[in-house]
Image (cartoon, rainbow, N blue to C red; front, side, top):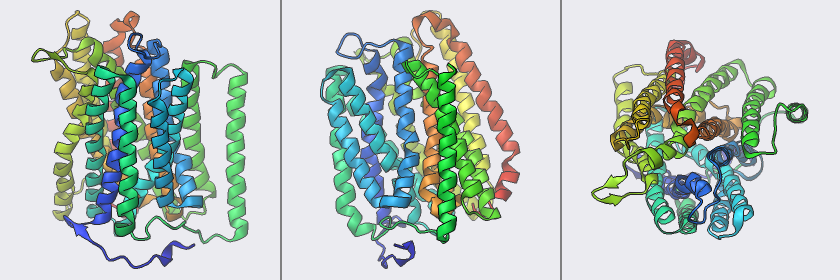
Length: 501
């Protein structure tokens, strides 16, 4: 059915935004409660040898952590395709929520490694179906684009981080202080609340948005040719991976080998998909340039998340082993440091949302590419702080919580310059027939970053403690360097955006 035959919607508004935004706000809030809450204790559970965890080594635990968090976002790509071609966004969000809830229920049952890994896989599949489509649906509420849409994504981002703050606090406490599986069970309850919110309020405030599959204007022969091109590219990708495995370049028989192989898979998948859309997607010249800009944003996103997502991996280990956790005589859960990120986001999101509108109203140019560059520069500064903290940790002294606090502050500011801005940019620059799929590619960038973050944490065993400052320093140099390069490219990239702000 064509997307142009939507029923007229009488809009109810709150704070100048459609009520549908707040339906999606609360749905995403509960889903992120479940995801970030479980993620906060995941690596700790994998490494735990005393309280019923899996007792893995740092290298294997970090590899599995990276594989899981990467899979969550990588599966956004097929999740977007399913919405664009089979289910529509609304059904994809609903079914994705159900699958996520079932996955957390499986995790809540003590049943050994096999059951636990089944639960992780189930959560990842459900998140891949839900995550890109709820973000795309936010974009559908603002067909006019502009600064109002950017502000809407900043508000939506506050929902993400409200859920994160609640999830890390509750799941982190239950998991670290009472029982790991109680924490996983709390995540299931949160996802159930998200499903109820979406189903009950969505019918009233979202109208028919997201219920229809967008049909392209291609003739049957052109559509068939496009599908053949896609199959050829997929076949080449599979053949290449098989060749790398058979020649021993990749080894998928161990957790660490599988994680490294997955990095290759994610990178190749992203490049192949972008090439497919550019070469066989039926786009005009303006659309191709915009997709090219999105590819640059994808690279910047992957680098940013590789540093930012150390929160649940290397920085979690640093908090647990090398940071003073004493809070007025009570030892707080080390996972609670991850709360600093959503807490800072809730403080600064409305400030930056207002700043974007203020700059536009006064015709002050702060382009999207410049915002991305700023995010990477802030990320680099965060790791400069960690270089100092890690050198102090080598003396055997538990470091002050202020080091992690300032690191998370720079993380947060960088994230606000990139993540809500990137969500909005992908929804505005993506050709209509590829909206959910390109939103999925945005999350593939996050997937690659998460995987790198997991592999990076594998070096944080006691034997390699002396390498900590150098590891953090490398991230700082790379982030600052790429940020400066992107700043130099900001003007030409803005021109390629074709007037879209």
